[in-house]
Amino acid sequence: MALINVKTREVQIKIVYYGPGRGGKTTNLEYINTKYRDQIKTEMVSLKTQDDRTLFFDFLPFDVGQIKGFDVTIQLYTVPGQVKYNATRRLVLRGVDGIVFVADVQKEQRRKNIESLNQLYENLETYSLDLFKLPLVMQYNKIDLKNSGIEILPTQILQKDLNSVLKAPAFEASAVSGGNVIPTLKKIITLTLSSIQDQLF
Amino acid sequence: MFTQSQLDAVDSAIIAHLIESGVDHVIFMDMAGNTIAKHHNGKSRLDATAFAALAAGNFAAVDAMAKLVGESEFSLLFHKGEKSSIHFSKVNEDTLLITMFNKDISLGLVRLKVAETVNDINHILDAK
Ligand SMILES: Nc1nc2c(ncn2[C@@H]2O[C@H](COP(=O)(O)OP(=O)(O)OP(=O)(O)O)[C@@H](O)[C@H]2O)c(=O)[nH]1
Ligand SMILES: [Mg+2]
Picture 1 (cartoon, chains in turn cyan, red):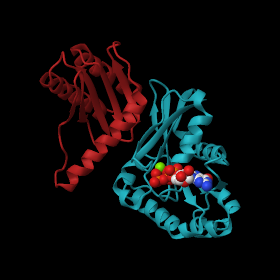
Picture 2 (tube, protein in one colour):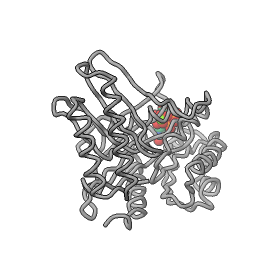
Picture 3 (cartoon, chains in turn green, blue):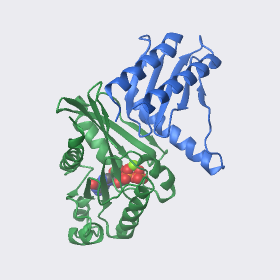
Picture 4 (tube, chains in turn yellow, brown):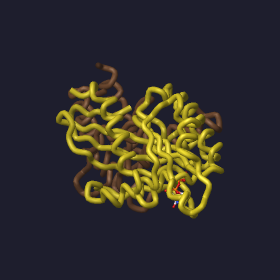
């Protein structure tokens, strides 16, 4: 739940990038960190293993200016995607206001995407949160791989697998080169801000 | 959401009990890693935003470990360094109080002052 401080007139919003291991969640944050360096006051925090897999989370806070006289800070987190880390994944979801689901478009990742989304639904339930009611954006990442001859899932299939009921805004993306990373981010910020608007006064 | 008068009272409690006892930094935060109030003695610098995110993660991880070994919680969470130490205290189900202090002040005193502060904050938050 967003933290609204009436005294300091600050709002802190938590957005979590969720998805299967190696899908590109950390890469999204790394791109944002480079692109918006000037607006980011702190270093990105990454708790990772020696081989650069997320162990606990990545954390990147940045200011988006004022809304209704409140200074708004967006705090971006990623979860660790590896199957064995579900306990820590669930911890990171605590207090989440908006979610970006980063799916991997490689054909061989099809089942992992679906399993990860199902587990997201269950993990949110432990906080009495409903995925259908949370601001959500789908990102189909690594779309560039089709140029290297790797078999990828058509967006139509991804939409059917992951988004036929949720009907969230969806973007094809290539996080390594920054393709659609910022539109994804802007979309989730807009959705999340409008979901908390009426709590501001 | 906390009211202005609650936040004022929380600030006063932190300053009176902790900052005036000589601790370096105090962060009152929620379990999601958001800072609600922060205070320091003006002598040392800290990236409180990143600190709060890590503290929430650390507390949550230890709390989950407690559950795995059948404890409802580990009541004392404390990290000791050469020059400075960090003390974690759960205030209620949703919030944490983190205190950083140097070797000029004893853990005993910090624990006492933290307990007083936690008690005050709970009274403040209960009185809506
Ligand atoms: N070709 C291609 N590779 C990508 C893209 N995005 C990320 N990668 C690569 O995929 C690998 C995994 O990316 P990460 O960002 O670490 O993935 P993650 O989702 O954070 O993984 P976990 O931390 O294990 O959950 C890295 O080698 C990235 O360079 C993309 O858009 N295209
Ligand atoms: Mg990662």
